[in-house]
Length: 417
Image (cartoon, rainbow, N blue to C red; front, side):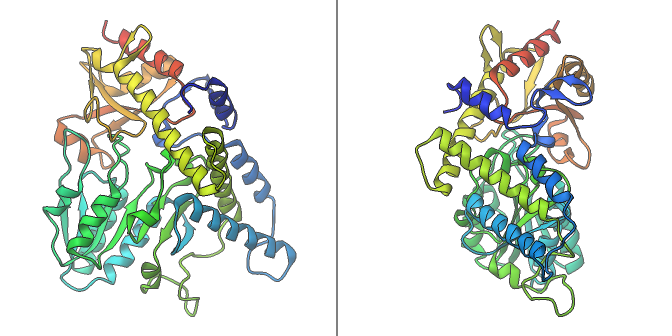
């Protein structure tokens, strides 16, 4: 696997732009992946290539036909990557915008006096959309409280609030504050047991970079990702919708094809960079397994990524070499449990008697990029119940190394005096 293969780690890192150096500040360790992962060099090259092409889709010329073929290939690649045997993929402004569109469509088509259900753990992208459009559509919004101690929500917690008149449900796949992954399959199954016709929409934005996407197994109707958080670039989002969500009346141009969900001419380069992302997972799966089929290699890559990131977070929490872990430092508190098996490459902490912003500044000065999460409209739903005004988010991906973790631990240890 990745952990015991330094040559593979080096090969992985070589495929990403700015893996160990910021173009503005110089050498640095990148532990801000939840804010936006590193970009594949291949995606950078593809973006430049397509930015120069003047043709658009839908014209009767060779260039236009080629662009359509590239888009169709990207959609097919994404279907393999996310294991979606039905439904359709389309792109929009961002993952947040796509969540709003999917949730809006489901709400305005729901029966009057129906309910919308979601959880307090969710990112405001889905919570804001669900609450806003429930109100506009005259639906009741039902909030499922998450567990503050574990930083997650379970199927059993959803069950306590489910009724047969729930028409729309939202699920967060992984939290960008606690780092915990939710069991989407179990939560969706619990919803379907009580409200089988419910439209279920999932925010997969934080989860996608950590692999193991499997839409066919979820039994949901919508799934959104932000490609800049899964090794592509800013400027667009990707959504998958089921056939039945596709068929609902939705915002569209007059007399346009009934299944059309995109607005205007989309960037072919955006689609093409998703093919680069899928190719990368395919390559990595071939390095960590003997699988030959693309989907099997992608699954192998997801397992390897998960195992390696677990290794990195364990080293961070429990120590590496002669350095104590965060859990052994009296001046540090780890959010959502030190040994939480749901953790996906992210550790959030607070340092005693030191504002989180000051800790992040100190880390930056030492060449370590991390991020402050404040109890604001983005993270207050998680931090306020814990009595915290802020925390430090340290987020990793599989191109990070144990040596980088050790450097961070040395700096955090010094903060204790």
